[in-house]
Length: 96
Length: 229
Image (cartoon, rainbow over all chains, first blue to last red; front, side, top):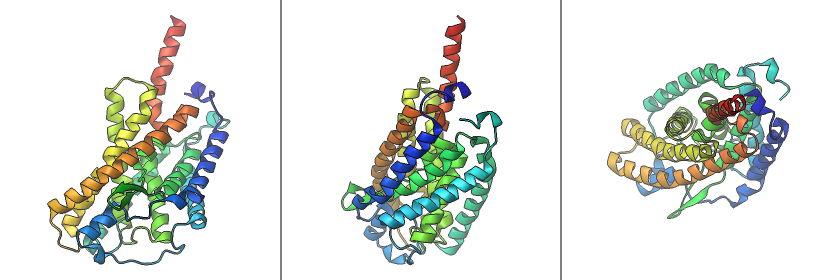
């Protein structure tokens, strides 16, 4: 496995590339998201149980470019922190 | 498919909450085996990617939209147990900060979108990997099929939960037909996005894709044999 790992783009560039894509998706592409109700919401409207929803306001409000990017950073920190804390530690893999 | 507060009664929500806590607890222990210094940096990014793409609703016709759930994607990229953790973090942030999915419904949403989609997506993916030729080029499509199947199945689990503890009286068959139908369409989008994302990482660093490792090991053995022979 470790020999395969040496080929190709370095992990740092992959991480950076994915991070840029994620920020562009949350900050820019999200403006073009379809605003129609999603599958479950639509089914609840069509079959008369949408009114049983107990709605509330989120702390950050709705998804927008700014709140989306903020959400991305919070998820990145939380998920990254949790998985970093529980990971295995292999000294021989550390330089990759 | 984010379930809001009020759709399911308190006992059902408490039960799914207990299941969610138990499975996430096991995942915290089991994820250790999946996460090494190469995959750990990817896990946070995968969760962030899923959060971002979940904002991108795509139309599925008849004034209805859908978005990626990401359970199958996470399972293939970073491993199933880590995948459960990634999607659970996404759902937690969505419920607390964006009111996307209820608070009492958080357990339900984790059961549906973090546990069911990871389980179904991973099992279908692995079965296809075992049955089909061991080729790296097949991995993205196998992940896509697993993702596609996971969405209508998660929707079906919601219908079962609704039959057990729904707060309105909706006939089981009616709800199943409606939920399964629209989520099969949404599943197509799930499959396409999952296939493209897995394909993109495989193109640059196949060893970073947890689900591709069995195929990579196989490939390495073949290379070594030909060198010796």
